[in-house]
Length: 107
Image: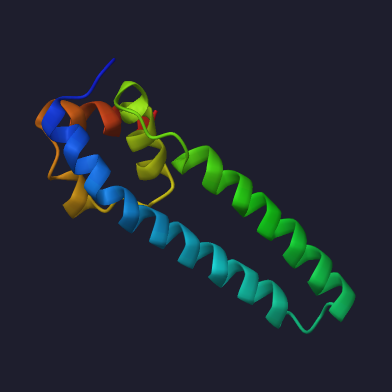
């Protein structure tokens, strides 16, 4: 699928902010878990937190920077595979888009 329909493009733009929020909340929870791991020294927790925060920041940029209609389908697939678009939200898209996303995500 090259370009998604205009109606799907508009829905994706609307959902993008929610997806960013979900991504950031998941990242924060992961960082909290690292910081709470009392089996590691403070230095280990600090260094691992920094490393994970950097990885999450790069992934955030990879997934969300430069949203364009020409790459919207792949962005939508990526959001779905990361669990950032719910079933209910995916159901808002056209049948063709939904089917193609699920096909790509499921492999």
